[in-house]
Image 1 (cartoon, rainbow, N blue to C red):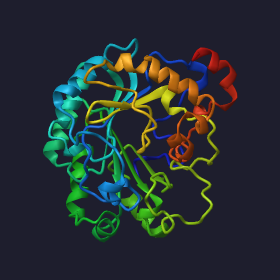
Image 2: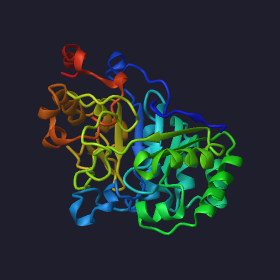
Image 3: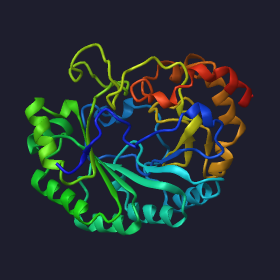
Length: 338
């Protein structure tokens, strides 16, 4: 296997100690959510739930390219480049007809050190691959759902030409240029150690990094009981020890722009609060605005006090990195966010 196995580690590599660099005049991560739709219905994902039961997600399903370009222009006005511009969200980004143009525009504006897409890669034809590489994509993150056609049918409710899927992914890797390819799978999609070995054998030579991650209960409404190997969840999605979260770090270093232009402070699927609207405000104005700052200050009083959604949220608990823990720095940080 040529790829580096990063199971149990942060996929993006070494992280800064967040508390030491706050407050940030530029977010570390901006997540742009281009399309609220998916061609898969994976059992552990929100798309396995009927749309009427998901709550409010976005007023629009597809982001207008004009609005997208405005957002990128806004991001380019920050004092520093963002570390990661992540094109993903709730859905499959390759469904957006302008996805390659989105990457190309972000790269041309020099907005981020890394421009990445997270995808199931089922739509990754050679033509799409060529356009993404040509656009300057920094990193392609591929979520694999099984090692056979049958497993994909069981996991995602779709019939996939598995051999063609693997062939297309190999094509991307062989023509990737400077793009980093990260391939991952969740443990629930594997049938034991032999199947895990098969995963590494199939995909280990067509990516730069590879990992087995863990299914964790992060979507309300999804029945995780049959997916979890036991009732005690001791590891996060990334294989790190689970700890109780007193302060959610996400609003302090990231924001998400939804297809309708609304900005939310985290990756929760039940938004604690809408922080602004990119249709009428700049991204920089929203990030540094009173509403966002007040939310951060309230968060420093604890997730239970920040919002009802935050009090019930489990996303950060199962995705927390030790470098992002803010619990011991609240007295100093409260003064900075007053």
